[in-house]
Amino acid sequence: MAGHSKFANIKHKKEKQDSKRAKLFTKFGKEIAVAVKLGGPDTSTNSRLKDVITKARANNMPNDNIDRAIKKAAGDKGGATFEPFVYEGFGPSGVAVIVETLSDNKTRTVSNVRAAFNRGEGNLGVSGSVAFQFDHIGQISVLRTPEIDEEELMMMVLDAGATDFHAEEEGFEIVTEPLGLGKVLEAMEDAGIPALTAEVIMQPHMYVQLTDPLDIKNMNKILNTLEDDDDVQAVFHNWEE
Image (cartoon, rainbow, N blue to C red; front, top):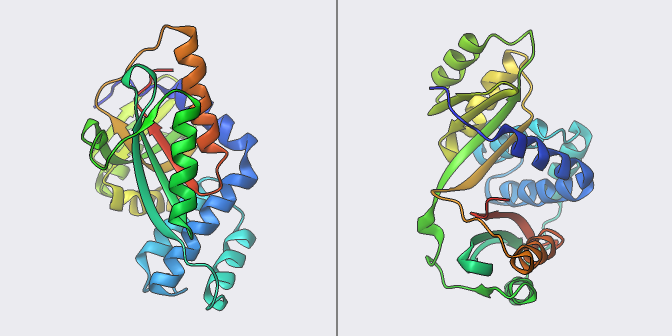
C-alpha cells in the first residue's frame, strides 16, 4: 500500500498554515460554533463537534482556544449564524477550483469569491461544474521518526477505519472517509502519535500544469485573494504547483 504522497507539498502547506496560525484558529472557531449550534456543546452527544475538536487539536489549536470557542458558541444565542456555502470555478487554462466557506452573509461571500476569480482572469462556475474532478477524502500526514514503526502504524490506522496508507522517506499519508477522520485521529492520539496535518479535502483526479508566467501569476492572485477572505474555510484546486 506504499505509494507517492507528495509529502514535500504537505510540509510546504503546513508551513504556510503555521505562518497564518491565528487565521487558521479563527476558521476552526467558526466550525466549532456551527457544530455547537447544530448539536450542542457536549461532545458525547455531538459527533460533529467531537470531530472538529479532534481536527483542531491535530493542527495545534490550544485547548484553551477550543474551550473558549465552545463556551462562546453555547452562550451566544443571538449571535451570527454561519452557513456553509461551496463555490466552484475556473482559473487560468481551465484549472479547477473549489472554495468552501462559512458565512453569515451569502451575498457578501459570493461577491468576494467572484471578485477573487475575476482578479486572476478566472471565472466563477455553476454548482457541479468542477466537483466531478475531485474525490472527497480525509487526509492525515505523519512525520517519520525512529519511534514510529511503519507496520504497526499502518495496521493501527487501518483497524481504526483508514482506507489507504502511503509511506515515503519523510513520512506517512493516511487516507480516510471524510466522516472517519476523527476516529483515526483518536486512535493515533491514544497511541501518542502526533499528526503533522489532518483535514478533509477535495483531492483532484488529475493535475494541470501551468507554464505561462502570466497564468501562474493570475492563479496565485486567485488563491491568495481567496485565502485572505475571512469567509473562506478552504480552497482546493488541481494546479500542480
